[in-house]
Image (cartoon, rainbow, N blue to C red):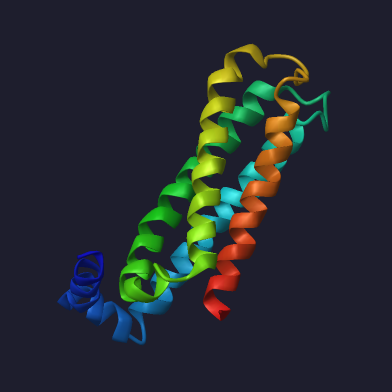
Length: 154
């Protein structure tokens, strides 16, 4: 049943056109890379600040700027990632690397949601309670990045 649905997605005319396009597919792929760059490029300095680096830098403005940039990057990566997934859906759902990437995205997203809830108490230097979550976030998002690259090769 799932295989039939995924095959139907792959066969859908707009997705088939995307898969076979010499122009649109690379543009969607570039959009995905841009989204990931915005996401990871924003998350890493924010998490480093939350982990205790740069305590002299006020957290509130850093949080506001980088969390919005990360959210925009995530949205772009999600939308373009869904399009890229649709072009080879039956293949990707069988890839352990792809499934591990999705699991890590879920874990990193839950961690980010927890950190966002804690933000109200983070007006000064980062309290020790968020440091492990910030470090976990760094490893999770870098892991997503690495797994995403490996999916393209294996």
